[in-house]
Length: 218
Image 1 (cartoon, rainbow, N blue to C red):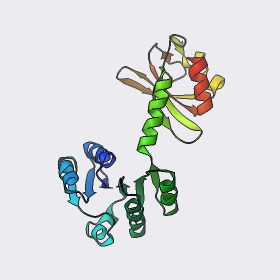
Image 2: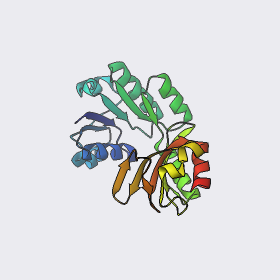
Image 3: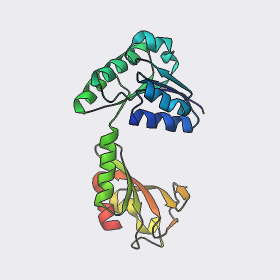
Image 4: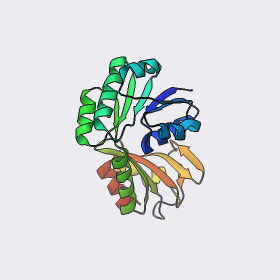
């Protein structure tokens, strides 16, 4: 289903979000006050506009209230990011996702009603660090302070065993959401599914349980 998105701020993060949404077939309005950035994104957005995202009249003239999702990716000016977010919520945009620079920025965004706050550099840093400390971890997604999803490489220890034989949920409190074998992915695998060496196991659980499974179960 095609959706309409607006992205305000076309730095590295904003441009990346814009390009991916457009590539996925959605309608994207790209906004930035910098002409060069707008020109660079023209072929990767449905519409691109040179405009000030902190000016209420400008936002109204662009019909921003008609967008269900707006991404505020103003990265170099915290004051502008906060003002833009505040205006969007006052205008009545249902979903406003905002890139935060730091903890204090995050706290202010929470107070003014941002629906989702992202820390791309921090999140990517966590994922890279997790990958660096373990050869078994392919990817890592933090769901909350306590729970995560990880992609783990199946070792010889679990190879040729079924899920029910490994008994991962009972032993470690983790759940295997899917198994990737090359280009194929098996969502919600059955208990009799056989794990092959070097399969990618997509596992959800408490961070402590995932760590224990990684160290003991694999």
